[in-house]
Image (cartoon, rainbow, N blue to C red; front, side):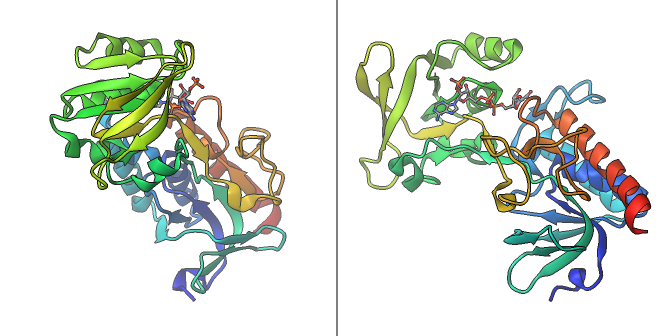
Length: 315
Ligand code: NAP
């Protein structure tokens, strides 16, 4: 048994992105000694992004990894504990809650803040899955560097795709942005920036149907289909970057917490789940705004609700 699990924690925070770490700052300052679980993607989506221009307080913008690292440091300064782990089972019917991280690593907690965020969505083509790490990626900041002077394709029509395409122009010779419609979810400012970039070519009403690796090693081309004309063609490229949104990381709570049709945790009064003492914040419950600042706001609210809950029920 991990030593972290020997005593009952007042609160465990599942996730170390912007919402989880903000919750940790507030819970730590309330003397709750929160335990933050850092999963597969420590730092969450901010850790994988580049310049964040819309987080208040940074007039010149701030790099995503630096921002989230600062929030982590702030939480640690107030006494938050951190533990790497991947939740394999949660029992929210018993009290305190039992959280099982596998390998006999369990933690018990009076309250739980679920801030497990969302992970990149894939096209789910067998050829795409096979070539992840060999030209297929969902993280331009992680992998863009490998495609210097190469032809790169980005899929998607939201802010993520625009951001990836713009970022990848630093490396690629040309960047093609493929979107399945001809209208975009992306904010006007990010769409215009991409449209104006001389290296970015827009291909609309088009989907990727297959990923080829003629070399049997790395991506060499994509099979594209225009949904309006039916035209099918091969598009030579060295890399395929997915910028098609994210899936909430809440599957582990199926049957115990309410979710909408797309798997987002349902909350009332901002952060309350249907189990008293279990709160959810950030991208795992927010399908509407999904911004770093709204994630931080809901993390703050979740920690304040934890404090109230413990005062009322447990302490
Ligand atoms: P999003 O807004 O949901 O956009 C996803 C895009 O991918 C849509 O254009 C969608 O097409 C397309 N798509 C989804 N599944 C697809 C599939 N199977 N095949 C082809 N295309 C597919 O997601 P996002 O761009 O990740 O943005 C999420 C949130 O984060 C937004 O609120 C955004 O503002 C925010 N964000 C902000 C910044 C920033 O401000 N710096 C950067 C990144 C993200 P349809 O439009 O046809 O559905």
